[in-house]
Structures are given as C-alpha cells and as structure tokens.
Length: 84
Image (cartoon, rainbow, N blue to C red; front, side, top):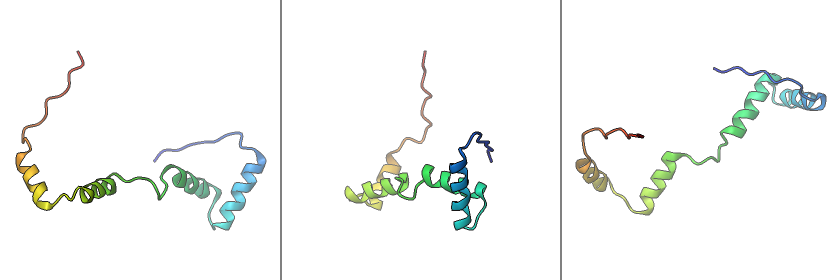
C-alpha cells in the first residue's frame, strides 16, 4: 500500500479531524483514510458492470443473443495498433 505524509495542516483542521475521529471511534489516521475512501470511491459512483447490465436490459438483450455474439466473435487476437 502507498504511504503519504501531509504537512502544514492548519490547527483548526487538525483539531476538527481528531474530534471527528473520536466520534467514529478510530484514530486520526484511520479517519483520514475513511474520508479519502469516501471522496474518491463514493457509494453512488457508476459501476461499469451495473451500467452494462442496465443497458442490456434496456435493449432486451437475451442469453441467446449473447451466445450468437460469442459464436460470431473472432477467436484470433486483435492486431496491435501502430503509431508510426
């Protein structure tokens, strides 16, 4: 896991962080991790699998449709792109 050091936190922010951590019964460091996790990966984020499943339902895609697509799909790997 990565490590991070944060310097020059204003006293009022540091004190508020410690108070919030105490309310949640965890250390200030654990509180910072929880805050970062909540901001970076919120529960309401769009999840790709859910979005694809919703799209499949909207267009009424069936298991039979998927089977046909799998049969028609090329089995050879794609050629890599050339940027020259």
